Amino acid sequence: MLILLNLKTIRNDIDLIKETIIRYNCIPHEIPGEIKLAIGVTGPTNLINEEEIRKMKSVEEVIRVIKKYKLVSREMKEEDTIINIGDSKIGSKDTTIIAGPCSVESKDQIFDIAGRLKEMGINILRAGAYKPRSSPYSFQGLKEKGLQYLDEVKKEIGMHIVTEVKDTDTLSIISEVADVLQIGARNMQNYSLLEKVGKINKPILLKRGMAAMVEDLLLSAEYILAQGNYNVILCERGIRTFETSTRNTLDLNSIPVIKKLSHLPIFVDPSHGTGYWDKVSPMSLAAIACGADGLIVEVHNNPDKALSDGSQSLTLKRFEKLYSKIKEIVPIIHN
Image 1 (spheres, helix red, strand yellow):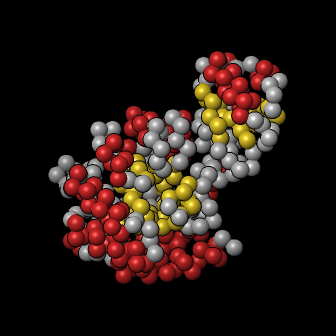
Image 2 (spheres, rainbow, N blue to C red):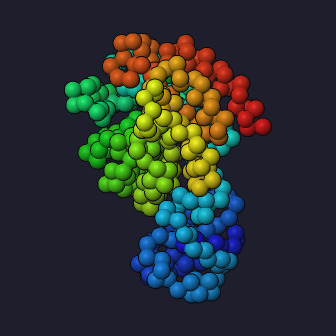
């Protein structure tokens, strides 16, 4: 349910409406926005007496939201959600690029990559300290030591940090360092974890599961928003299909689909989406042309010796070339 209010509604009227909603054992959510003032309602909304709400002061309209997902839908909020990470306004007409290695391997490695990316103009670094891997024998990350190095990069180089949270046990210590918490594809439907990050006041980068439909992704985002955290960035990272020529099939169809269904920003991960470095640049440009709000790209200073995902990582030189192309096409796409 969506309750639309007069733009001049005073705080007392808003609180009275919220109190009435709570009496029906439902949860009111003030929808942040600039175009209109609204309260989203989740829970057993079928119990609510709509006429009672309509008659309340400042209420202009009551709308039933028919989709399974409520808070993430365009029905709840028509305008795009803008998420601020430093000077980056994700979801605006700017295209935000997040780059860095799959994982932190050493202090020298992460400082070298971060420093060179910063020189290029990249301000948001991605790198994993805790790495959930398909095989228990693969490199699992440096864990606490990796987090320490990321914290040092943040303080000394001045980059914002995106790193993955793989469980609820490590959530608190990762939250102390990370500016953006990444939920990986394997955890997209880890509902306990989604509810936990929903209670943290930090942006969440939520990756689409490898066998998930768009609706599944939006419903997972709904878990986070339902807990009060509205700063969710969706991420298309490829899905499993019968095709074997690439690691995954990068579903760029999802970009315009999600843009139509949801107000949340959507990123594309062309590295995991293809699995091969030579496919990353063309798919990055295609993603931007499709309307993606940003990219998250794997970049390594020595991909041949990377401890994880070296085959899909761009060298710094190749990334710089791609970044130059991105800066050329973005004004054309957004014109």
